[in-house]
Length: 320
Ligand SMILES: [Fe+2]
Image 1 (cartoon, rainbow, N blue to C red):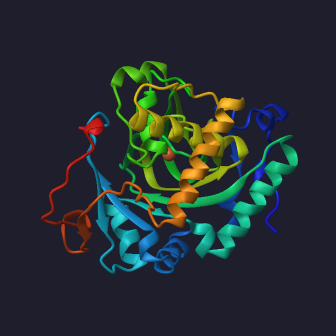
Image 2 (cartoon, rainbow, N blue to C red):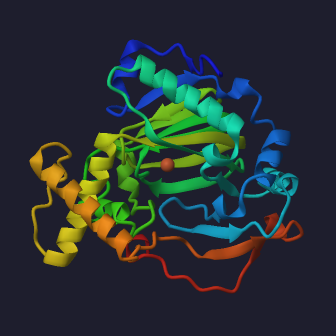
């Protein structure tokens, strides 16, 4: 068992989980799991359908997020391209495929549950993020509760006010929760006046309440982070309320659109969404989640390892 992944947390930090932005210390880097050599092995052993390879533009206000195809490249080749180029890798669902990482992440969550009164981390998952020194991630929200355990390199993270619809409108949050949009959401530079900005170092955790908007700019070195996600009864209900609001708005028109997570109305909205999901499951009407079209393939001989494909894409109107 991996012990003491949480380093020198204060009582206040334990009590603030999911309620406030927290910068705290951790020991994931001491596990020896995130060396270049091991990262290459993890990439080689990670199923292709759970590996996202992306590149991006330079302007945080212009949504240029481009997803690509691994094209059979080896883990070692991909790590070289991460060092030289401008790539962002996301090894999704690592808990399902890499037992040593699963053991460490579960040990961390167990420790949090033991030390934070009332905290529950159910539906646990984790993504391993490996990115170039100049890469960035556009303004977005994550649907589950999200914790960024930074392990290598240095990155700047802007964290914007949570539960504040001036920064992500209700309509957009509803679309994200309903799977009509990815988690990327419209950004305006004026939002930066309200952001908390952190230059995150290896060994630091940054976390925030569910659906808090944030964006990232790498500042140097190959950046490696574990982005862990969990839900619990309240987090699931928050998603269900937004999804129900989307359903009611699009099917019935004007409707009561409170985003309140507690109380009988929220319970009814949750019941509504669960019933619709069950109905869809029984009658095979499963809805596809939004995904980006792959627009390049990895080619170690192309500039920056990126060979663009001849495909046209239309971005959601919210991001144009
Ligand atoms: Fe995120």
